[in-house]
Image 1 (tube, helix red, strand yellow):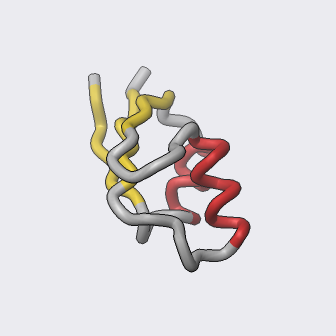
Image 2 (cartoon, one colour):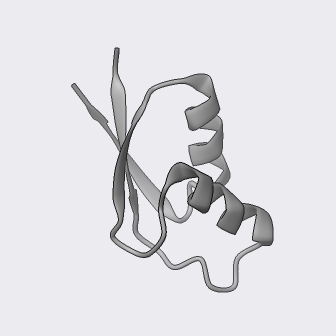
Image 3 (cartoon, one colour):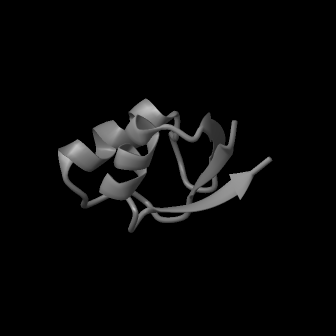
Length: 60
């Protein structure tokens, strides 16, 4: 199954509480944190919510 490498590239300071909660549930705590998650619709939805704060790469 495909995996997604999600990297937080911007700070969440000044963003909505919903965006902060989404970053936290993805496992991102501070800038330049990286997590690798399974490519599922739930994860894609969370990434879409905070797309302005993260970058996404597909990993095998």
